Image (cartoon, rainbow, N blue to C red):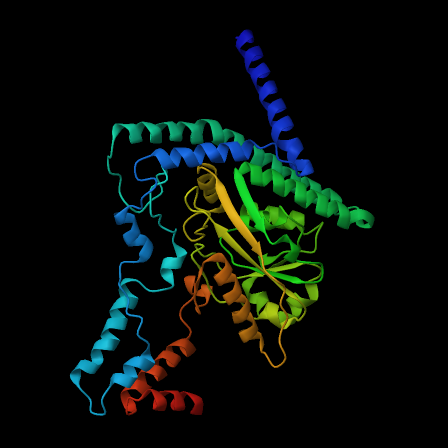
Length: 427
């Protein structure tokens, strides 16, 4: 028994030495030894040689593209085709739109994981298991062993080291006000780099000449809490976000001691002046709810009313290697992290877009929409006008009334596009 204990201690000693030498030390200095690159090359080759790895699966494409073939005809075009006299067929357009909204609307599908066009040897898919070949089954089984028996223990160890270092480091730095800013940046950068290694993260930063500068506001599309790690891996920010409980709450309360982060309750966010007063340095504003990285929804106008320079950032994850979306209504933060750590890797592209300022005469809403459009265009995301808060809240009565007004104009007026637009201007 003593011999077994000695062997186990020796193995653990060697293991921790390798982890410290090959992962932790390079992370502290921001150096890559090329291990992640080699791992990604092997992973890409493995996915390419598996059946269906190169060609999309038609069954999965059905979910990816949607189950409804939507007619892109606008209400104005429909109104222009109407005759003056009412006909029973005039209700078909409204019935069609109603059926589409019931079966598959534009909003709720953004709060579920993005479906893949081809299988990535992970079990997370909306399509039931189908036996294809013995070779593919063996490859999948080997992948399960690698992910759960080899990568998962290593990732959990790195995550524990990174989180504990973040909590302890920021708590200690908060007691040193004279050199707090410099040490805070060092702790945030170092711990974020360790946490990126814990996710087997491969991040590509583009257009670094447009990186946010101090005193500006960084606005990015929001997919999950690891967006914070992705950004902090390349620079230190003072974050603005929702206050959480549990593990995230512990991290938030610790980090705010060393850096002027702003963690607010949703009710407090309504008081823009209170939040603005607490903001300083780099800010990070985003959509209020996590979206599955296929689209960009409404940005809250509060961050665009403060003034100053806005630095848009587009973040796009590659779903082939792992699903980065956090469905907070279904998974806790710990369950979510375990799902990520049992994936192949987190591969992400980050584009720093040119800074923009509010134009003369431009209100905050149009300014926010302009920034949102640039992020959606660069990240290859769908731009949607809806508020991400619809995930938890009911549709506002004003939105319902707006649609009712548009529909009523089509029915009541003579059906010409000119009269429809004229009626809109008169309102």
